[in-house]
Image (tube, rainbow, N blue to C red; front, side, top):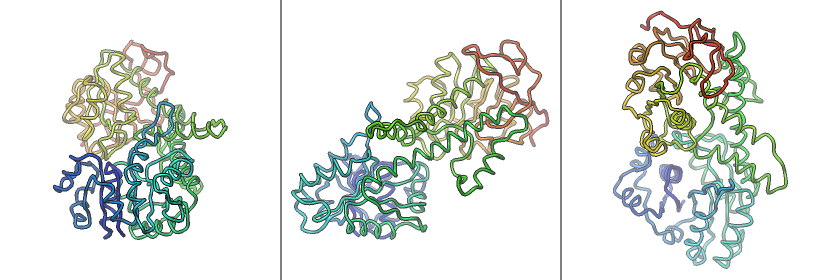
Length: 474
């Protein structure tokens, strides 16, 4: 099939390359001329695992241009993957999508054959039917469903695993204006995916609601697990991994996204929750669950601040390991580690940080504040508290003895993902998220007993402390 793929960012380029890898002819379109030049020179400027190699393998089936008219005239289907940023009120903006439609409208008008326009970008429910479809009909003088087709086919992928997720989806979601467009879209995706996903075919509006609400449901699972982890920390003998392992075994629940740790972040989940709330508001419905999911999510950073504040006061050094919102990506948008760094800096702590990929984005987000380090051992230098935040595989392989040597005396290790559970420490007092730990007999930064001292910044609830283990790491 001949495909015009408009928008070659983190998601658009990945999907375009995946289509080409299966033998489809793909014309990639982007308004960034330097990006097009780089792609034509064989360079891959998008940092995503597996993308550069797959692009090199599929190059014979691809061409890149900034000419959207050419792409539409020489393709059977146009897939639009451009940003739909959130407006101040939380609703998605259609500005970029509408700009694309304005540019390709004349080409679509000139076509003598049936052409399908696919919107991949996330939009508010009702957008395709009541905004984009009338726009296309006005621009072309044609009738949607008879002279051209419109589909809404959002992807369910995550940064850091876009290629894998695109090729092995659990579900392919297709909203269509007509049966002919639906069949063509289904045929296209069936020829690309390597799994056997459920194909959900529906009208445009239902597909828009499905995309938004599915992401909100996933965040509900994340927040439930994180709230449960906070409960487990307070009950002697409790372990979040044991509990969620059993809960996730029930087919009504499932294990995915049910792991107590950091809250959700990134470019999709936080804004999708807010957009869902605005969608309900527009429909005249007051929702209760989504706002509380967001509230629970924000409480994770507060728990971390309390754990740190119980141990040491402002002026102390805190090391943060992992700054991107998830492993496998450099993206720090809505990243809880970055929010934590901001809060610590505001409170007067010395913040030393490391991340395998995210340092440039963090430097920009923090406006140069804090100390970015080349490796985690340097980040731990002189630290009274070390917090393992983003569960990069590299951190699971750290030499703990070497890490301890770089810290201050009697340091605390806060482990958000329990990567070091069962490790014998020489210096660290160990505090895993979601697991009850026995109190030590030590003291906090104000000289009070370790299980009872308070944060200088807030009157935090008393939390149990861990037993300091003295056996050496082998």
